[in-house]
View (tube, rainbow, N blue to C red):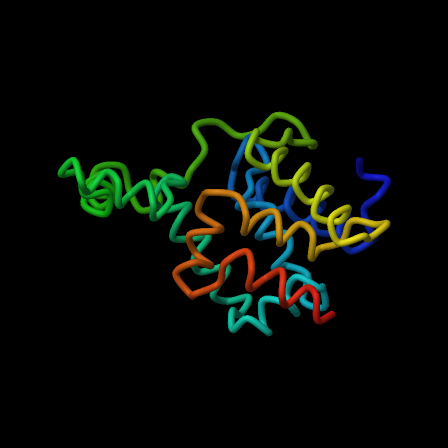
Length: 177
């Protein structure tokens, strides 16, 4: 699969692994892939996000917020609210007892240099290949990774949706490249 990746898309995956390792994660999540895309200042994903009104700082701030909440997406937090569960209140109490960022920390550090992908990240990588094929592209670029992440349910799509950015908006921006 990675043989179809452009150089910049491969760089994003390498940066995703670095982001996951820096966060103390044992796996590369879809959020780490998003972080990997955002880390490449001159990349196509950053250019597309800027066109859509999202800065790299916005991405990094949101990923830190999601990490602080233990990876719980806005949609999941909203669903829990319907059961009377206030995720932010729980996070605050956990941090009072265990210290700031307690839910963001991995239970034990990774023992390997190469981290595996989570199921969601694997799905995003596979969906990005389909996005490239659907667009008639021979190679898989950062724009295809971004399309897959926005199409997938979770914190990345929630973050973009909160800014009025959905799959059709990203697809339209990609079409203007």
